[in-house]
Length: 175
Length: 84
Image (tube, rainbow over all chains, first blue to last red; front, side):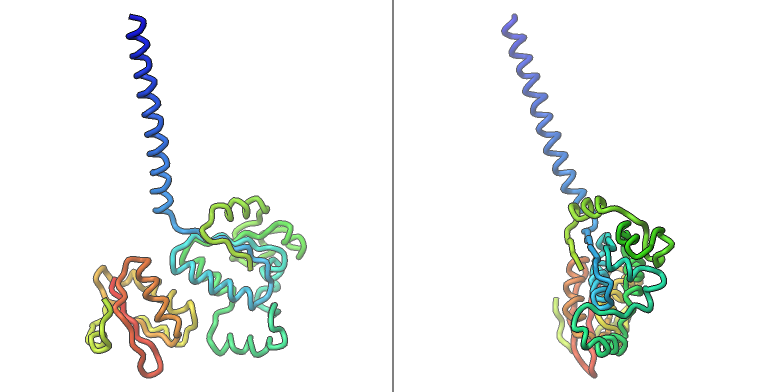
């Protein structure tokens, strides 16, 4: 009798163990299925405050928007300068080939390239784009509050959010 | 299914997206914005002066599950077709 009960108990244990394994397996499949259904994600660490790099960022954002990607932009140091309300439209600094700045800016105009703020705005209209201003970067350029930055900015955040976002991204860029 | 230029010219488009004069990614975004205007099976004709568009549209269409039908260059611009 004791032996039979022991055997039954063992079967019970095996059944519980099997169910547990199935649960874990199904959970993994479920997670994979959910991941497939989710939009792909782009995280952009935007450091540059120069219009050449901001324009390039705008083009990439357009590509991400066309593909319905979720985008998180983290505005770091020099980019926070460009995002300040009083700077965004008049800042015409370029980061590269600086001796050809006039030619570059004239070409953008000739090609009908939208200002980077317009490209960012369009991407926000077409897909899920969140723009976070790094709190430290904001302070460097005397921007303490969200109202100090252009309306494209969604909030002020810390670097932890960037780490989380980058960790969970399909594409992670630093510009 | 890639069609010949003659076949493409005989297609009747349900929607024409004229993105001539805009640079990348302008044409692609114009297509994305207009795709909702046609129903499944509908044909979209895209006009673009941007060389990259004729490579972007087939890629984008494939990802979205639409059919790229082909393109041709004439009068200084590209005419690209896709089927929703």
